Length: 423
RNA sequence: AGAGAGGUGGCCGAGUGGUCGAAGGCGCACGCCUGGAAAGUGUGUAUACACCAAAAGUGUAUCGAGGGUUCGAAUCCCUUCCUCUCUGCCA
Image (cartoon, rainbow, N blue to C red; front, side):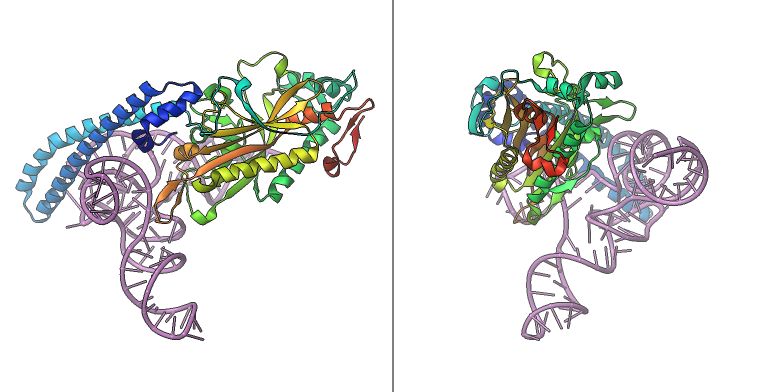
């Protein structure tokens, strides 16, 4: 959520910046500013009325104490109209604030100045590329065929037990999943991230805190019986640990990592691109989250990018990094780098990590602050990224490491799997 | 899940209708004391919003959350969430 005070001061700048997202926010921002003016005026009026009322109440109290009930009675009558006025003003204030809040929820974050213009993922800017794309034999298979051939992932069985998009990993496939999770967590903790184990469901307030609600209401599984949501990413529980907190400046950087399954309804997805592991309703991911001083958040973003590069380098997977364009940028993000691994057998790039700086956008919703030099609370910056998402990494490994006789396990994973190949 | 008790500031804890944003203690910050530290001592110590160009200041709200009663609510009533104890169930 954008800060109201900043919208007031920089309206034109905000309108201009939001054009990068192909949004014309002028009308919306003007409505917001009008509502805000109304809210403030009402607030002042209400405060004055209540002040008057409080004053009278104190006088009445004193009069009763001093044994002057008649005079007290007179004053009591004077309060009637004030009470009514304050009730009305209170209602107006309430409604105005709610309306204002709702509109504020509709505005996405302001893109960072480096974000390129563009409408779709075609306009994303490649900023880095590394690794050799392996040359595969002519009869190289996509991962879903490999999974079947070596009986390590059973999609049909998942359909039987739950439904499409809930695969069942078997044997060495399951072990490889566990190995990847352990390896990622070890890399992250070695880089100073504190490991946390998290709830896989969150309440409504947490959904709002990180911005999944109300924007992506239909994308989360909603457990209506208890009004909880299955997490679409560990970002939600991790970041919400700090909701309503005022941390010390010296606490920065706050760095957390956590493994969780992620649940996404993926309403509206279909076709070849959702085949196999490419898009699932439940998948595993190891997330990294940082909370930073605003002065250091972009340095932190670079640091996270380097960290993920290092992991992919160790796995020896060919990858590229994209700076997302305005049209492809997530609702709450100011700047996002997507990591993509090349899936040789599918001949396409697969997104395997997304690293974002949200600046104060999430922090404003979360009320996540720190005290500055003067002891004044200021909004912190939040960042997160995947390090890493499992299914597509697995797809990349299966496809790129396939040989005629099996699948070679990347060297760095062998200590975790206990085997060197899948045959 | 049933019965009971309870949720007060960073923490502990007093407060059961009237100058209560809230005693006292701990913690923390700054100062004094000290060669330095401890002890001692003094002062300060929430957040949001509004008014103000801003600081200072003032006002309003906040005692889990949301309603209500009352001139006036931390205190009374209702709803809801959470915690604890006992019983039940259970990996």
